[in-house]
Amino acid sequence: MEIFRNTNFDFLGKKWPFIIFSLVLTAAGLGSLWLKGGPAYGIDFKGGTLMYVKFIGRPPVDKIRSAISARIAGEVSVQEITGTNEVIIGTELKDEKTLDLHRRLLIETLSATFGVRGGKPDFNNLGAQTLAERLRDPLQRASVALSDQQLQDLAKRLVEFRDTPPRSGLLASFDAVAPVAGVTPAVTGVLKQDFALFPYSIRNVEIVGPKVGAELRNQALLATLYALGGMLVYIAFRFEWIYGLGAVIAVFHDTLITIGLFSIFNKEISLTVVAAILTLVGYSMNDTIVVFDRMRENLKILRREPLESLMNRSVNQTLSRTILSSGLTGLTALALWLFGGPVLNGFSLALVIGILVGTYSSVFVASPIVLFWNNFAESRGKRRRPAPPAAPAAAPSEGARKNSKAVK
Image 1 (tube, helix red, strand yellow):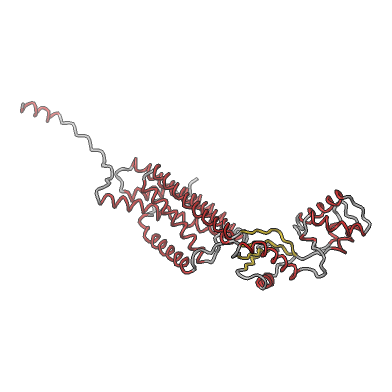
Image 2: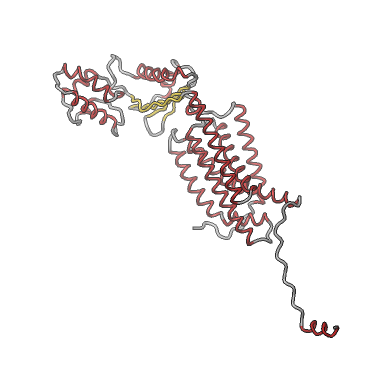
């Protein structure tokens, strides 16, 4: 499938506006990184606690933030997940000793702020084993005779019912558990009497220590550098070293601009963002290789054509493929960015930026580097374009042959 046929756009002739734009964007990103002391690393890299909490109604974000900030020093973030009643609460860890302390403080703060008074255990935040232990004595007092195994099975069924959509971990009333096998009016009465239903449920807790975060940060940097180095070696072997250098500079340019824009927009660099950047390294490199491969094919059959014109021809010949692949991938990334919520926001934003920057860098960064080097090498006499084959000598005419014989 081709969108464009027989196009003849002068891409290399328009390279300077794009090169200047890249330089300005790179300088702005580096300036932002310098002013802010580097990228804004997420909890994955600097250490901290992430707690996913779901509420029955819309979460009171401001109330949550103020309550936690009053008890936990340092940076506290509360992000609402669009389209759900769930928030992500994040706290920064400065010391390994506070790993478990922050988790306990978060739980205690939520309980004190939104819990039900009276000291009753919260049914919405109990596991099956704990629920079974808390049910044993109240059921015995209510004359509900259950063996240990029956009690364990009942607690397991209650927790599974609570965690199954559409409840997804939250019950608004104990009357809702009536359909659960083994739940009698006496069991329901015990639940109402001895348990409480908090208006929130802690869905998940993630804790990363500062040392682990630093190790992850170093490993992410090394993974990116190894990927760039491996690609440089591959392209230098497959084409020429200048092609490999141009492709790696273009990919490094894409990565630097993406990180710089994250700094300008005050976005955090997390593990998912690093995954997106590594994805873009491969994506941009593949796009560059496609253009370079067409250049190599055209060099074999268009020896008389100037190099800049040949490069333009190669880019025009791969234009439909570039538009289709970049356009469809970009639309998918854009949909993730717009509708994926805060969990996927950083990942999808990195993809959107990287696809846009990576697409034009293959044409306006990688190709000009090869062109500049070839022009420089030719001017220094180090490289010459293959000379066109000499025209065959014309055969002497009949009259010329006769005159030749006469002279002899």
